[in-house]
Length: 120
Ligand code: 5GP
Ligand code: ZN
Image 1 (cartoon, rainbow, N blue to C red):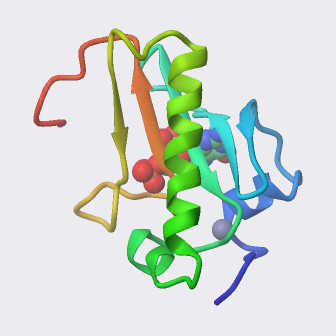
Image 2 (cartoon, rainbow, N blue to C red; image 1 turned 135 degrees about the vertical axis):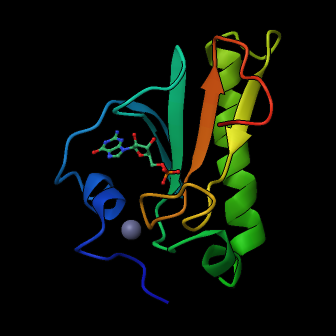
Image 3 (tube, helix red, strand yellow; image 1 turned 30 degrees about the vertical axis):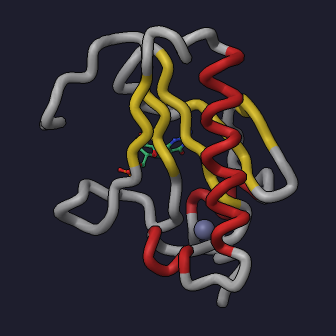
């Protein structure tokens, strides 16, 4: 499985080739501010291992531990930003109908306004 793709936007951010506002990091992941925020807090939790979507990601040999790290990063940021009491949304968009536009798995953390359901 490819660990890094030179043509992938998020791999390039992970490599430091494209700047981003870093909100958190671990040895397995990076948390950045979304460039086009859809809520007062809109962060992206990005695994360091390149995988096009959640399906490809979960095929990795250490995927469960990596996924746990991604969730832990999101929860740590929620606590740090003190939105863990007011609430937040975690979202993984997958494929074209899922609204995925960047082909490197990421978890959205959205907070700071009521989200409504279903999303548009
Ligand atoms: P998706 O639509 O794939 O679920 O989410 C991709 C997200 O990446 C979008 O919310 C979009 O605003 C964000 N994004 C796209 N390009 C960049 C970029 O260059 N930097 C950052 N920080 N976010 C980006
Ligand atoms: Zn990538």
